[in-house]
Length: 271
Image (cartoon, rainbow, N blue to C red; front, side):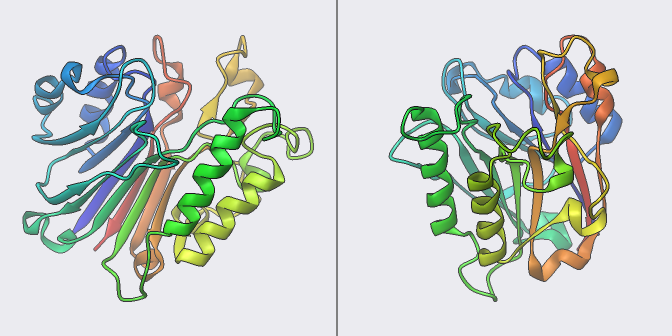
């Protein structure tokens, strides 16, 4: 059985629900994980999203910012959330696929939205950056893969870090820019390696290929400038890394009307 999973920072699910519908219609993933839904739970467009052919939906949100959701063709046997840094700020949600998912039954899917960190890469003067580093330290302590025999798992989301040299348009120019500073990239890679996760994108498409999933709104012509960063990730537990058959970035969504500054990343696993 193939399991297709997509992750997308949608930057307001209500504002861009037609884009969600279009993407689902064109790509038909089995599971879509959204970040930055910017929607309180009582305003979440649950029925509309379910009408797109995804009857199983879980979400955790708040007004105006943050928020995560998972849409699925398959039911869940379990769902849960984690509070990070002592805050209830809707940055994580997880599900376990139920037996109806057949070969993917029991696979755990974690959806994270890591804090962006503001503009100044100094935790002493920038509380947002301090929060980001604390979040990443707690994420590292959690790990997500406590035992080698743990259930196969997939971790996706806007991790707000471009960890490798060719995950940004200019490694040298962005070393002092939040999302590519050495303290962030080291923290993310240490978390990934220590806990037993494989970066699915770089597993199939290693460096030096340049790969981006985000382009700033500040660029007057994002496509021509192409000054992107790979902030959106799909990781798989090491025990299923060889099940990854393909992974790609749906770059064209960045050119849709009123787009998110992020684009979907989609992986296909043969489980």
